[in-house]
Amino acid sequence: MSDDTGPRVLCVDDEPRVLEGLALHLGRRWQVFTATSGRRGLEVLQESGPFTVVISDMCMPTMNGAAFLAEVRRVAPDTVRILLTGMTDLESAIAAVNQGAIFRFLSKPCAASALLDTTTVAIEQYRLVSAERELLEKTLMGSLAMLGDVLALARPETFGRATRMRNYVRELATEADCGPTWEVESAAILSYVGQITLAEATADKLNRGLPLAADEEKTVAELPRIAAQLLAHIPRLDGVRAILQRSLDQSAGWRPNSGARADDRIVHFAQILRIALDFDQLDRRGLSLNAALEIMTGKVDRYHAGLLSLFAAQRRREGGHDEVLVIPLRSISPGMVLAEDVHTPSGVLLAARGYAVTEAFVERIRNSDRRFSAEPVRCMKAA
Image 1: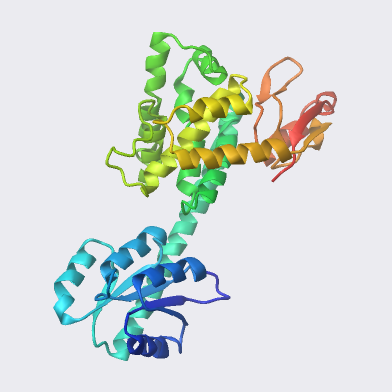
Image 2: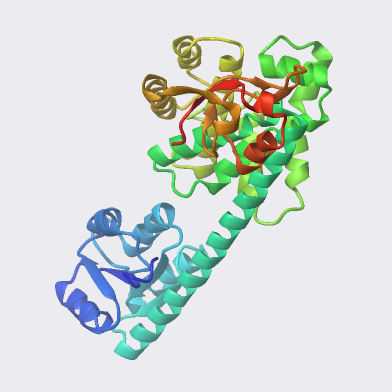
């Protein structure tokens, strides 16, 4: 929540007079929005969010307060939820709190002082959670970006693709409205970490989409476990590990009847990463855009159809509108994407096609032989 707007509070109750009272007391300190039903509350959340706090009555027709706040938790997990309840609803309120969906509950009628005090505490809770998440995301993503740069220097063919994967999943997750994308972006960068353990010949086959021998297939099948082990001792990465394990597991596909909820965040993020990884593998084999997407579309049990359709549309837009520049290598700048592999004069791969140029890469080119850095390279402008 930015400081220029201040905290926002959404109050939901089917009794207009109760809403008037809530708006009167809370409106003196904060921005207050109201809704007369759970359904309308969700619409306001979508139209005017994000909200710092949502306060809901328990007893409402069609959708009660517990069900409404559970839905708020799904679509706006950082928003702090408070339940208003009469004494007859006390058992239901306690159950809702115990299930972890509600921050606090207040009994009706509620004194103005108790309402203000509880809302103040809820706003502080929101600030703490938001600050911690922002710190985690920025620190983690910065660290992973540095890791990607270092690994790209060691194995450019493998890890140069990590930044492309990150762009793919961020773009798809954002358009699919899956919420904060840091977990799936982290999984995209880390999805190649296990390949450090591969023999160079095996890694080369994997990168080029060539058939693997039986023992190589077995080794590659172990990569999800290796990646998960490497992350096991890093706190707050349970979601990233789950995304990696599901998306990198060759036997895991999209099975709507497997018991997973259709709105399961981990399932959707794993699907997003699987789509990006599979497409990249087909692309590395030299297939055209249409051929690669046609192959993927035919695997109806492997991909979420809606996500795959969005991804296909994004790739076609990208293919039709990206302007390819031919410029001296020393003229590239951070954010540009290489449209071809870049090799040193001795033939060593420096960066793979699709690599998103970083400050570290630019500095490396500046420090290279001037004749080499003057060589032309095909690339696309920064987004």
